[in-house]
Length: 475
Image (cartoon, rainbow, N blue to C red; front, side, top):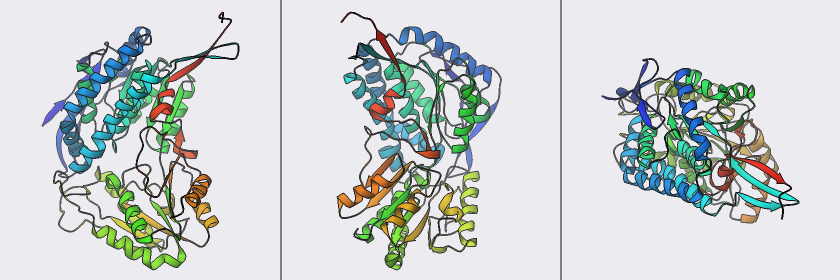
């Protein structure tokens, strides 16, 4: 068993202030394969002190030098990408093909994108009777989840380092090992000591200490809406900036003129991305009532294409969910769908056939779901799709917006102008038309209880900058 008991603080791996360990489970085998330390408020304070000491100089490091640091991180990341992918497969169960092509590769994209934005960014410009400067905000506390254990780390760490901020990172204690590999990559890149710090721990201890710490200027969290509320309250006493990327219950509106078969099949597979453990997954599919039976048949065919199994088998398309607690939550919500009268189109409760070990759940589709059912309102965070029926376009938009969340939306139509008109009416931070691919340069973030602030590209870069007006300088 691997033991990783130290934290990365002040440019070195150091012992925790107090011994307290946690086993890391392999969700495919249910076995403990690694052990980490859980930090305390004292560990957070040590990291903040190191980050504050480093900020004074790092904030004034030239753009050219910061670009050089980023290029070294990118080079080191590429060299260790297969190892990073294997680590994520082991710690959170994503199939190795997905870990390699999506989990690890998209994390690398964020460093590449931060370097691209930095290379052309204007930190100072004339405006009115003065000058507007953009300066690094300071010490950033970053709290990240287990479902995309390195993508969400990179989406915060990369722009923070690019803008001249210093960092205290708390990765998820459930899937912490890939972030520790990244810490090694960053160390090898030669950043000044204290610029990047990592403290493992749980949310109530380390996460809350970061949110409340008076030495942290900004806290960025990706997590549940409940966690976002808690962090916001803790951060309020020091009036620090708070950026939140929270839950979602995204609607996928399939308009009657779309190619129904391909739209439904693609929608099912998109819902099941990362085992359904994906905040922007299109978990509510909206289909015109006249196409009900055809849509259900297409959904069954899509489910039959899913290959559950060993996540290290390249042919596997869905591995286990991350934990026993997650499995139990998903199972309870599936049962609630049955109890509330939804039609079980595919899947259902119970362990998948032939998988006697591991946190595996059956990919599930419900039909005849109504907007007030729990499966239509709560974020399940598993491979469960709800199909809701509508009569008119206006009703479809109303159903799509009838949620406390607003992270993403999806629209399918053969008429791109019609799809665009519908997209403009969806209250969400990102809307995908007709299967549009991910774009790392476009902003990502939510409306309503899906959070505030934006990540990715220039918008994510500017989250880590303060705005200063300088008046009276001779022109």
